[in-house]
Image: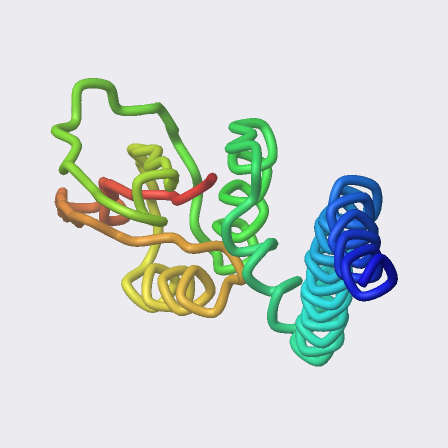
Length: 175
């Protein structure tokens, strides 16, 4: 009877001892294993993210020419000296005399949202003199230009015995 009574007590004692010694270690092992699984999923998500970025970069390389055209159409710096040089050169190429060029202040700006909110508008007033065909060629040159240029207003003044004068209000876009 001693053996039958001692064996269950020893098994019960071993079970309690095992639960106090091994159960905390097992729970710690489960916690570490769940952390490892979380880190593995994070690594996989990061790898997917970077592979997606690589695919986007490859797609952008396919559109590199278009992006360069956009960059030349909307330069970062609205350098007035390059604009003045451009208008002087194009007007003389088309047979027009550039009499005066000035910036226009105080134009009402419209409230823009999204990407267009970053686009700046610079207004210039050009005073040109020459024939109508020269003006037409000049406007076609502006239209074909890589820069985003809009002619807002044209005022024509014709005096007897002189070449017509043209006042152009031009809007130039930049970032």
